[in-house]
Length: 157
Image (cartoon, rainbow, N blue to C red; front, side, top):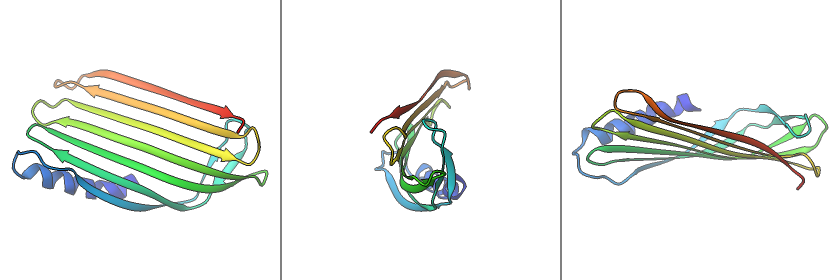
C-alpha cells in the first residue's frame, strides 16, 4: 500500500516545493486502495482471525508555506473476517501519519497514530489496540524526542 502511494506523494510534494514560497492551501487527494486478505491474532482469546480482502480509504493533504511543509495522511478501513472457531469479526482501522518538515534547517517531526478495534460475536473477544509513535529530529540530525506508547485492551462488549 505504501509503495503504491509513494510516487503520488512525491509528485505532489515536489510540485508544491518548486512553486513560489508564498503560503498555499493543502493539496488533497482521496484514494481507495485494495487491501489483500490477511490474518490477525486476537490477543484476548488467542483466536486467529482471517480478514477478507477489502478496500482502505486514504486521504492525503500537503501544505507548503514560506518555510515549512506539512503532510497529513489518514487511512480508514472497515474489514470483515472469520475466526478459527467460526465467529464473525469486524476490524475497524484508523491510522494517521503526520510529517512536519521545516524547509530552512533540516529538522523534522514525525508522528504516527493507530487505533484498531477488533470486534467479535462473543462477550469477551473484543480487542482495542492503540499505538503512538512520535520522533523529533533536530537540524543536526539528532533524535531529540521519541515517544512510543502502545496498548492492547480486552473488553466485554
